[in-house]
Amino acid sequence: MFGISKRFGRVQVLDDVTLVPAPGKVTAVLGPNAAGKSTLIRILLGLTRPDHGRVLIAGGTTEDPGWRARLGYMPQAARFPENLTGREVLKLIRDLRGASSDLDEELIEAFDLEPELGKPVRTLSGGTRQKLNAAVAFLFRPALLVLDEPTAGLDPIAAGQLKAKILRARAAGTTALLTSHVLGEVEELVDEIVFLLDGRIRFQGSLCHLRDLTGEHRLERAVAALMKRERSCAPR
Amino acid sequence: MRTALKILRYQLQDVARSRGVLIYLLLLLITTDLLLRFGGGGPRAVISLLNVVLTLVPLVAVVFGTMYLYSAREFIELLLAQPVGRRSLFLGLYGGLALPLAIGFALVVFLPFLWHGAAVAAGGALLALILAGVLLTLVFTAVAALSALASDDRARGLARALAAWLACTVVYDAGVLLVVMLFGNASLERPLLGLVLLNPVDLARVLLLLRLDVAALMGYTGAVFSRYLGSTTGSALTVTALLFWTVAPLALAARRFGRKDF
Image 1 (spheres, each protein chain N blue to C red):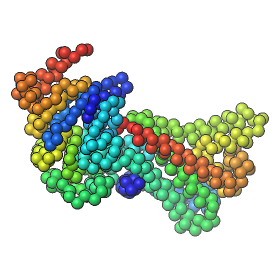
Image 2 (image 1 turned 90 degrees about the horizontal axis):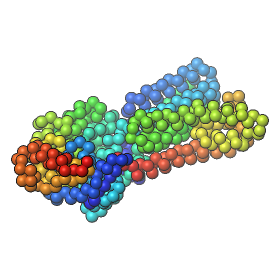
Image 3 (image 1 turned 30 degrees about the vertical axis):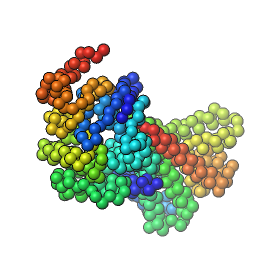
C-alpha cells in the first residue's frame, strides 16, 4: 500500500500511509482506538477506496476481484445470515470461490465445530460464531491472511489454538497482517510491528528494533513509551 | 451472473426461513381465505384485497428490505472480501430479497382462490392483483436497497424508506386532491395522467382497476386513465411504468453499491 490517505468528513483518518507487509511473516498493526487501523484494513481489502494512494496486490489493484481468491479475511465481528446453518454458510463461501478440493479444515476440528455446523447461525453463541469466522478465513489456504482482532471474543483455549494456527500458516509461507489490542498475543506472534497513531505510521520495524528504540523490554511498556513520545512532540 | 445466482440461492433460503416473512405471508394467506369464505365471490374478494395490496405490500417490502440489508452489513463485507464482483453481489442480494417476498405473495393470494374454486371467476382481475403485488414488491425492495445504501445509520435509512412509502400512499393522494380542488375549473385530465406515472402505488391501483368494473372505486386518476387509454393500452402502459420504477431505483442503488466505502 503506497501513500494511502483517507478523509471522512473533517477527520483525516489516514495520512500518507505506506505499508508493505513482509512476505511470509506476520505483521501487526497496533495503535489506540481510532488510530485508523480498521480503515487501513478496509482499504487493503478494497472495501473502502482511498482518497489518494494505491494498493497493489499480486500484480494488480484491489478493483479486480480475482486476487481475493488468495485472501483470507477474518473481520472483527462476524455476522452470518441468521437463518442459515454454519454448514450452509461454509458451502456458500466455497461455492463463491469455485470448487476447491484442498480445504484446510484444521480449525474446524481444533475448535470442535462439527456438531455446531448443523444449527442455524442465530442460535450460536458469540464465541462459536467467532470460531466459524476464523475457520472461514483459513479454509482456502490463503496466501495473504488479514485478521482484524482475531482473538476478540474467543475463550483462552480457542485463542491459543488460533494463535498456533497462525504460526503454522506462517511456517507454510503465508503472509499475515493482523490488528490487536492484546499486546501479549502480539509478542508471541509477530515479526514486524507497525504502529499507527492519528492516521500516521509512527513506527515500523521488528519487535527487537522497537525494544531497542524505547529501551523497554515488555511490548506493553514499549508501546506506551512510543505513544508518550509521539504525543509530546506532535504539533497540536 | 453465475455469482449473482449463487448468492441469490443462499439468500433465498435465509429470507424464506425468516420469521417475519413467514408471519407476513401467513397473515396474507388467512386474510385471502377469510375474504373468499365470508366476503362473497372472487371478484369481490379481489376488491377487498386491493387496499391490502396497495398499502401493506409496499410497507412490508420497504421495512423488511431495509432492516435485512442493515443487519447483513457485516456479512456483505465478508462476501466482498471473496473473489466476487460488486455488481453481481448486489444483484444477488436484491434478487434474494425481492424474489421470496414476490413469489410468496403470488402463492398466498393465488392458492386460496384455487381451493375455493374462485380463480376462474376472478380471472383477469386476480391476475392483475397478483401482478400489481409482485411489481410493487420489486419496486419497494429496490427503494429499500436505495435507502439502506444511502446512509450508514440504520434509523436514518429506515426513516428514508418509510418516507418514500408515505409519500406514495398518503401524501400523494392528498396532493392529487389538492390539485383537483385548486384547479377544479381547468381541464385536468392530461396533467393527472402524467401524475399517475410518478407514483408506483397509484400505477398499481390503476392497473387493477382497469380490470374491475368498479368505476366508483377508481379514484380520480383511475377514471381518467380508463377513459383515455382503454384497458389494454392502459394495462400495458402501467406495467411498463412499474417496470421502470423497479429498474430506476435498482440501477441507482447498484451504482451506489459499486462506489460505496464499506
